[in-house]
Length: 140
Image (cartoon, rainbow, N blue to C red; front, side):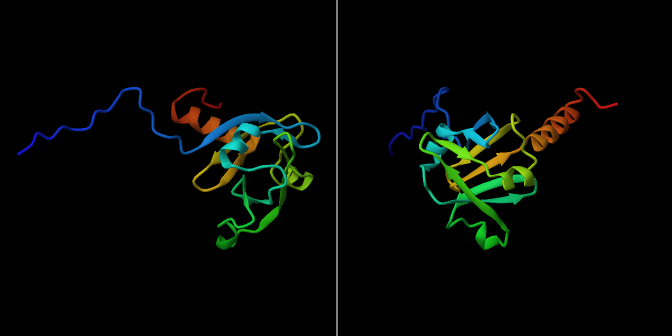
C-alpha cells in the first residue's frame, strides 16, 4: 500500500476573487472611470448593457441578463465609451440618488457577468450599520 501524502497548502496561495471593486467619483456629465472593473467583465465600448434598480442598488448586465427573467423592471441602457468610462444617464442618477461629485462603489461579479453599483446613500447605510455592530460611533 502506497503512502498517501496530503496536498500542500501554501500560506501565500490566495483563492481567485469572486468580485472586483473600485470606489469612483461621478463627474458632472455622469461619467465614471471604470476601465479596470469593466475589463474584468470583458465589457467593451458599444456593448449592449442594461441596468436595473434593485433595493437601492444599480445592477448592470448584458441584454441577455437573468435579471430579465426575475421580473425586475429594466431601468434603461448603460453606455461605455472608448476610454472605458461608464455613462450613467440622468434617469439612472435620479433614481439612484447619484449626484455630480459623489462617490460610488463599483463591484464587478465576473461569474454572474454583472456590475453592481453602490450609490453613496447605500454606502452611508452600510458604514453606519457596520460601525453600530462594532460599537463604534453610536449615533446620539
